[in-house]
Image (tube, rainbow, N blue to C red):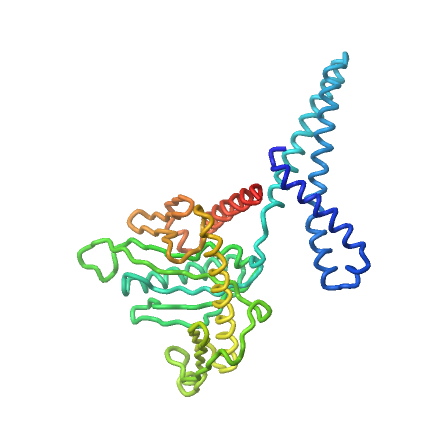
Amino acid sequence: MPLADEVLKKSEARYEELNMLMSDPAVVADTPRYVRLVKEFTDLEPLVHDIQRIREIDQEIEENKLLITESDEHELRELAHEEIATLEDERRQKEEAIRLALIPKDPLDEKNVIVEIRAGTGGEEAALFAADLTRMYMAYAEKNHWDVETIDSNETELGGFKEIVFSVDGKNAYSKLKFESGTHRVQRVPETESGGRIHTSAVTVAVLPEADEVDVDINPNDIKVDIYRSSGAGGQHVNKTSSAIRVTHLPTGIVVTCQDERSQHKNRDRAMSVLRSRLLELKQSTQDAAIAADRKAQVGSGDRSERIRTYNFPQSRVTDHRIGLTLYQLDQVLAGDLDPFIDALTAAAHEKKLGAASNE
């Protein structure tokens, strides 16, 4: 098989091992373990069936080849040729199914996300581009029927954002948006530029999987909660009520604020959700750094120090530097048409994971 035989054999061996374990009375008595093993067994079953079917197909192809060699009947040989063509087509389909099944699953892909967008180099122009990216992601969320809720924002006088934090809830939100983490660079003539010169500004985007309480355990003694009066939009109710929340995680120094909700209780809940997500990211970043030390070539690591994408307004060009993809569709991309980039990045990540699995 073109697919790595060693990987396939490991999958089959694990399948048989699981089959035996699920018959063990001691395992059956341990309900949590038994449930985990049943799920793993169920996930492996289609893969193992496809592996076994490929072996059957190979045997059937050989039998038809032998028939072609030994038969004197022209019509029979023609039928054998047709059967081989059908079997080879089925084999290709099974191989592709196996390739997809072997891609390691990201356990975070089904999570909702917290998106944090911050203006970087470029001053007011960077803040305006941060607002452009915010609208882009909100439009993309709408196309995918996801719910978006602003958690915190720091708006400039010209309508830009020094910083904005919002949640995105919906099916496959993290699996699609995770590739957006990084430094986004814009090249254009700012509205405030009288000389017509092109300026380069940068905005950082962080996409965090929304962590549940089971993902991150926060000791109440490790946090400091400050309550203060909200500022900005929201009407008189906001200005008269001390509902904004600032949560500080003392061991790490991480500070989260939330003032978008009018309810102090809701603001606290949202702030704690963001804090859990940032702590989960910190934990993952530490683990990823250790892995990255042993791997030089990485595709789309999501490191925010990377320049991942450039938006060139004069040329109506968008370039993703991680995969070398350039599209002259700037308006469509900023209107939320991100799938060409996200699909290509997903495919590249799948190939990378499949290659890593084959080398293990």
